[in-house]
Length: 247
Image (cartoon, rainbow, N blue to C red; front, side):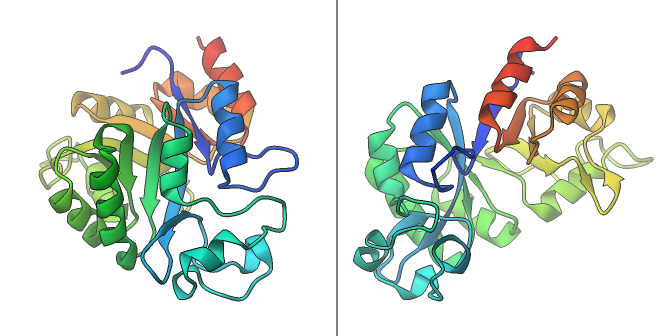
C-alpha cells in the first residue's frame, strides 16, 4: 500500500545508555527520522498511564512492585536500571507533538485511563490502539469511535484463514470498524504468518500489514519484498536504512 514501509520504533528503540520506553529513547528515534513509535501502557494505582511493557518493575528497575500498586508520584521517582525514568503517556504526547503512537493497552484496568487521555488531549488522530485481547479492543473501539486500531490475536487468526475454500478472503467474520492494520509476527509456532497471499489479501481489504519485532537486515528485506507496510524494530537505524534502500 505504501511506497516506503514505515519504521516503527519498538519501545522507542534500543539506544546506548538509554532505557526502553523512555522520553530519551523516543526522542532519539524521532531525531533519527521515525514518525511512529510503539509502546505499551499500564495504569498506576491512581489511574495515570505510564509507558511500560511489563506489569511490574522487576526487570527494568529491580523493584518488586507492580505499576498498578503504586501512585503516579511514586512511579515518577523510580530510576530505571539502564537510566531514565518511566514517562507518563501525557508527557510523551506533549513533549513529542509530531510523533504518532501505536499503543498496546496491556490490561483491562488501563482501558478507562486510555480513553480519558485520548479525549482530554484530543489525540484521536495521532494514535493506533492495540491489544492481544479482543475484549479490550472492543471496549476501546466502542469508547473511541474513529480511532485506528490493529487486530488482536483472535481477529488475526480469523483473517489468516481467509481465502480457504468457502471462506471470504478477509476471513469468516466481518472486519471490525476502525481496523486499519494487521500487526503480526513473521511466524507463529513455526507456521509462517506473513506470506505474499496474506499481504495481498490485507491490501485488498484496505488494511496495512506491520510485522514485529524485526531486527535482522535479511528478514527486513524479505518482508519488504512481500510488500509489508511497516516494520516494528528495536534497531531503528537499520530499519530506516533498509526501508530507504528498497527496492
